[in-house]
Length: 326
Image (cartoon, rainbow, N blue to C red; front, side, top):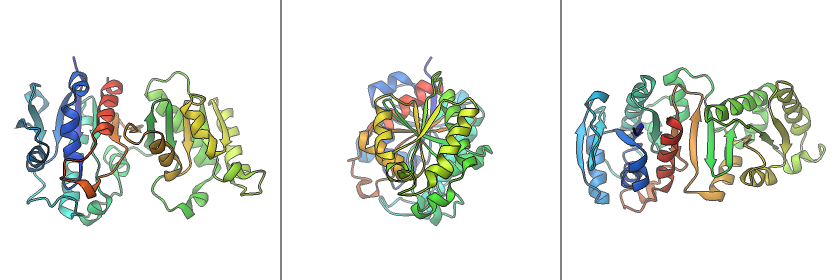
């Protein structure tokens, strides 16, 4: 029996609806899972017109009413979006609609009506314009599930990257580091790998400064914070090493030397994963009451509505949700 995966359509003005339809049309996805979509009917219908991928839209409000069949799209519509969507534009209405769909999908996931949740991209500016009090998916999911510290983990082939900090200015990263926070980051990473079923969990902590500070010549965060944190985490029984210079650690991770790397800030890990394979990188949110995956890219407003979006990352995210959601 195939797992039932929930899919939120993302920002209505972005590429989320398009890549969702394209991904569901992929034979590998069709063989791996059944789907229920969360979003507005008009958005899904518009995406069908844009892509030429048509099917019957069946609205449901109970999982018992779902009877998977080819060319049928089961949709849970929160009826939030009131008017037409201008593709590729920041819109408060679209931000509010995206959030309404996420809230509904989270309810289904918490109630175990779906095996996992896969979310199409949302737009931060649209969320703010729609007075949604969260900056991104992770903050939303943490609040909606009362999860204190969900973990973001990127996965592409053998490369797995966890993030200690995410959406903060680069100039504030060093000030955000302390021994306790780094130790907790290692513990969260270990627990996330355990949630994915990994029995071997070798974790490397990336350095902050060039050449891991080079003995304090290029910064002292490695000596004062990162090395003591690694030592303390090792004392707790975790398989951890570092700090490892950031210009080498991600290459070593891709070669399989480490099971995961703890990235200290957003771009440190994002650049590594997206350079390695932009379209196949999948983002997991771990530590929630359910598994959540998402493509590792944004709403791509510049090509939204043009039927030009590459669905490969969405395909990989859905396959990962089916694999681990079991």
